Each structure stands twice: as C-alpha cells, then as structure tokens.
Amino acid sequence: MFVLAVVAALGYIAAITFQKGYRELALPLRHDDIIRQQARDKDLDPALIAAVIYRESRFRPRESAAGAQGLMQILPSTAKYIAHKSGGTAFKTRDLATPQINIAYGSWYLKYLLQTYDGDELTALAAYNAGEGRVNEWLRKSGKDGGKITDPDEIPFAETRAYVTDVLDTRDEYRRQYARELTL
Image 1 (cartoon, rainbow, N blue to C red):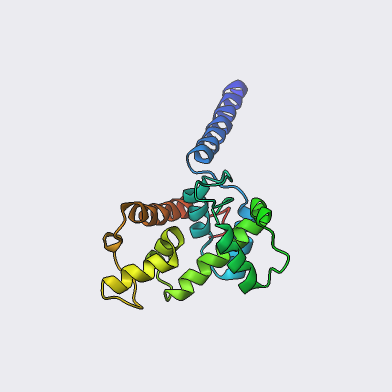
Image 2: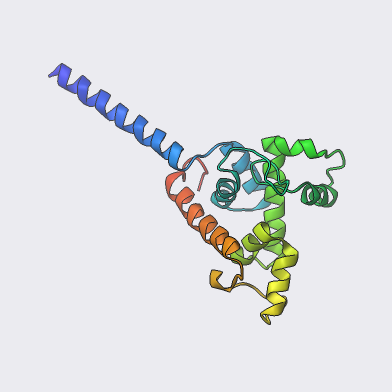
C-alpha cells in the first residue's frame, strides 16, 4: 500500500513537472516580475505585454534585420523618442539589451499608442508593428482619419494583420495559462 502511494505521488509530481515544462516550451514566460511591474506602473494588461514580447522575440532578445532590439523589438530611433518623452536623459542604444529597460520602453510605447488611439488595441498593435505614421495613413486613406481599425481585415498588409491577430490570441493564452504568475 505504501509503495503504491509513493508511486502515485511520484507520478503526480512528474505529470505536473512535465505540464509546466511543456507550457514553458510552447508559451514561455520570462521576466514576469518586470512585466507585472510595468503593467502596474503603466496601467496595462500584463498578458498583453507578455504577448507582444512573445510575438516580437519569443522571449529571446535579438536584433532584427531592421535594427529593432531586445525583447520588445524597439528601434533605436523609437527608443530615443521614448527616452526624450519619458525623461531618460542617460539613455544609450545598448540599454535596449537590458530586459528592465527594454520592457519599460516597450510598455511605455504600447501605452502611448493605446492613448493615441483612444484605447483601441487593434489600432495600437497595428501601429506597434507597422509604425504610427503608416497606420495614420491607412486610416486617412480609408476615410477614418482620427478613427480606429475596427476589424483586422481593414489592415492593408497581411503581415500586420497576422501580427495583430496573433498578439490578441496570444494575450488570451497568457491570461489562461499564466493568470497566477501575471496576477490577473
């Protein structure tokens, strides 16, 4: 009887360990302390921040072909703008390699875009991916100057359409799988 109980307990522990390991491979979460802090400081959904990081870098910081850097793939020109607007007077481009700074800057930019587009996540995420100027041009050309994208199909570029849809779907997955870690 004792041996059966030990085997059952070990099996249960192995199943939990496997489940956590699989979850971490399929949908990783790193720097959850920084994500929670930035979400709290900037009044953002931590699952949205995690989803943007996942879509941008899969939580593996790198430099893109376009020169975007770090976990949230911030362009140096965007980072300089953020530093100027947020008071980061000592900012250096190499700072984007630091998770705390990269997530803080990416979260600041995400909050800025959400405010710019009156809280509309579709439009803000499209701008995070394609740039604010391009999104404003799309809105103007579609007769929605100063408006919002109400459906991903309104986004004229497949890559940005896929990006927005993927981030929103991934945000929902982070909410389901990491509610405790993200304090949702």
